[in-house]
Each structure stands twice: as structure tokens, then as C-alpha cells.
Length: 482
Ligand SMILES: [Ca+2]
Ligand SMILES: [Ca+2]
Image 1 (cartoon, protein in one colour):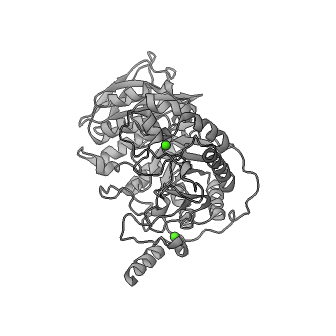
Image 2: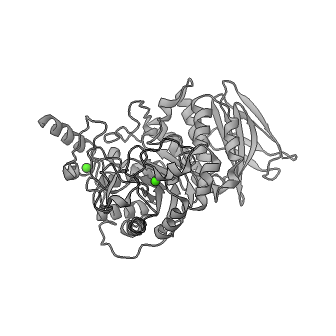
Image 3: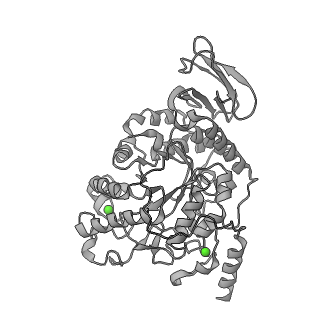
């Protein structure tokens, strides 16, 4: 026992960062939250599992008797809102303009550090802090032009034997056993996901509680949006009511590789996580598959309510990290071009915490970042550069995207909005490729400069053609940004 305590204290001290002056936070609740005023369009998002990220307050580590134990990969590890506040400069230094944090409501389990086993929907989990500390995080993030997206769950509670403070009656749950057939929509919606107690949204009391909760969380936190968990496991009509109560930008998780399955939910919420593009990028960049898969996903973009608002990602807390998953040689180079593609293609790029530090554990995809925050790490610098290029080039944030080349080892597109233009070309082969792009939409005579720093310039010719030379395992980002 003494040994566990010693580990816990040492870890807590090691992740302390210099405390910022407390200028913005700690204000009282009750003021009306601005409703949906923040525009997520064009932002880039850093995703943290809060418990694993940074421990800024040792006093909350063992809250509720669910203790911090760094030796146990399933236990709480001590990260909290104060730790996030202390590292906002680290996140802003990479150029991010949004963060997504794992669910914040009270849990009741020794292994519920991730927040997806909701227990009491009326309060913030004390391991993370309290509502005032959450508002402080949001206010201090806003001061750095970082919007905050809170993860939220409406499909299930944890495994609490069908009784929690918020949903105390067994009649508030489905009792249909686990989902066994993912091709059966009724099962996917009304059976349990991995034994998690499945809430009965058709029960008026349950529905009322969930809607009341999300309205409360929006007002109490003053956050700017929600990431919505397990969306396909709840009937669509519920989400229409839920979105009206939430009032904030909402991005749903629909775990499917099919645009036909995912896109319909973008019309009910505001956007979806782009799982179809995730699978295509995983194959093309991590597994050496055909680059044509990227174009096959983009070909269905019209099915989304607004494809510019979809969240793109290379990995997350539910998937293996890219550097673990990759089977190609030269994984680091592949990750760099995959990131360049993700941060220039349409949608809101989401980076999973630790990617910038080269995290690639295959045994733990939610490993601790508590004592790691190296702003000189090569991938940190690479991502900062990509975000700088995005920030300076409107076309790469909000521009219309048009495909200009695809084959098995290369993909190229142009993006354009107003007078801002960009051309991006990616080569996954072992050889230099020269891609003869044709019928560009940008005007003839447009001068494009290599934004990654070679200084080379390219001119679109009178026939709207442009030959782009792309190094082996390389990427070229051309912009007309002065
Ligand atoms: Ca803590
Ligand atoms: Ca369900």
C-alpha cells in the first residue's frame, strides 16, 4: 500500500507544470451560456483522454475511493482539468484551435477513468475537478482561441446492475442481452453494447433526464460543442430532440466504414466522425493499400450535411495507434505524409494526444502523457507546421476540394475559396513521382509556392495544367498564400 501511494505522489509531482495566472476562471454559474455562437468551421482539434493527459491536482487522485494506480493500465491515473489548463500553451503551441475531452460526468468504478460509464448525470466526476474548474478550463481555452468539445454519452450507463442515481429504475433500461448481430438495426439500437446497461430512450422519463442533462451540461460548462458517443446505438428521432436540447455544435460517433451508414447522422446532428476516411487512410498510409481508396470516400461527400465539418482522424482511443498499426516500412515517414494529408484535406482534423510525441504502444493505446510534453519532438514540430500552413491558407480550412489525380500510389487535390488556393499531392511509392495535373480550377497564371519550405514556385499554365514533382514517401503542399 505504501508503495502504491509513493508511485502516485511521484507521478503527480512530475506532471506539474508552471501554473498560469488565474485571470479568467472560477466564475460563478448561472449566467446564460452563449448558444451555438462559436463556429467550428476550419478549426483543428486535439483530443485528450483527460485522465491520461496531465495531473495538475494531486488532491483529487483517489476521489470516491477509486484510487489512482499508475501500475494498473485499467485504473485511474490522475489526469484532470487543472492539468489541461496547465498545458493549454503546449496545445496552442501546436496550432490547435479546439480540444475534445473525454466525458466529464461522475463515474462509479475503479476502471472508469475514460468516462464512458456514466453514473450520476447531475455532477462532474471529482477526479477531474468540479463545474467551476471546468468553466475555468473553457474560459482559459477561449483566451487562446481554443474551442472546447465535451464528450457525452446517451446510449448507456456503466455496468451498474440497472440502477444509478440518475436512472434508478430497472424499467429505464433495455433488458435484451448483448448485441450479437451488428447487421440487425433493432439489435444495434436496443441491445447492450459489451454488457453496458442500455438506456431505454423511448421511456419518457429517460428521455427527459437525458435532454435535461445535456441542456445542463451546455450551460454549466459554457463549452462550445459536444462529441457524441455511440450514436448508431440510439434511434435517430431521439437525436433530433437531443440536438435541440444541446443547442451546441455536435459531432457524432458512428462506428462504420460505410458512408451510407454514417452520413445520415450528419443530418440529425451537425457532423460525424469520419470513420469511412479513417479506414481508407489506415489502409493507404499504414498498410500500403491503394491510394484510390481515398478518392472512393470523397466520391460520396455529397451524402453529408456539410462535409467541411466532419472530424478526420488517423487513430483514437478505440483504435490502435498509427505507429503500432502500420505494417509498412518507414512508419515515421508514412505518419508524416498521413498527417499532411489529413491536415490539408476537407474536414476538421483531430489529433489523438501523444501522436506528437511518437506514441505507438500496441499494448496500451491510452498511455500516460503525464510526464511528457516535449515541444521539440519532431512530430510536434511537424504538426505545428501543418497547422501554421492551415492557419495562413483559407482554402485549406474551408475550401471546396476537387480531386486532380488518383492512382494506387499517388493522390492529388486542389482546394479553393475566394482568392485562396492550394494544391496538395501525396506520393506513397518508393520512387519520385511527377504528377501531370490537368484542368485545374484555379486561374491560369496562378503562382503557387511550396509551403513546406523548399521555396520552389510553380505556375499554372494557360491550359490549366501543372506538373508536380513529389518525392518518394513525400508530400507537396502548394499555396498562393503571400
Ligand atoms: Ca489529479
Ligand atoms: Ca441503445
